[in-house]
Length: 202
Image 1 (cartoon, rainbow, N blue to C red):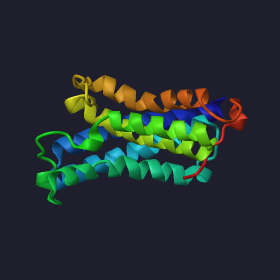
Image 2: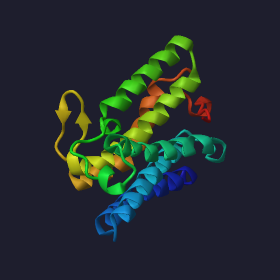
Image 3: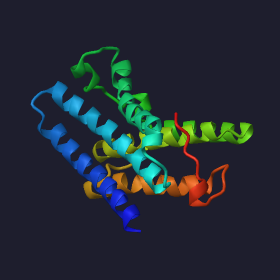
Image 4: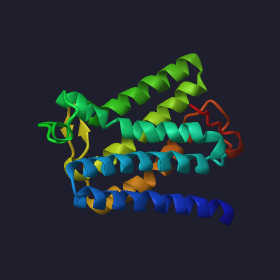
């Protein structure tokens, strides 16, 4: 029991600590470029830690699922590329001073993508598509929850929520892997026993 408890507890605390430290870097960075880089690195790290904890909760080897962890890490970082696309510029100042939020920061996007991938996975009986859908959802939600402290969550075309209170935001970041793991267990092509849950490397 304790062998399972400590890795989960450490990863949960690491997600919270990384989120808080990332906010300090964003607030006190010396330059615009440094703040943007620190913020993006935090998004990536939280995304990677989120999927790592999901792997641990599924009682699978992290070493055998590094591809999935790295995929979530990269995707949580690449979401910010939409700033440059919306700004039509590679200058940090232009990308961070947009009049409105860029398209990948709309929380409707990962929900729609998740729904499509789950639908296709059901239609084609593909565990790989199902697995990919959860990686996408984990990466996007970990990113959007962090951003939600400033502007709330944006559900186009319905509008945005109020900014997420700080302590609720940290709690949500730490709880997200547990929520997603629980949802994953409700929808899987494999038996629901812990020993049979399959995580496919992508």
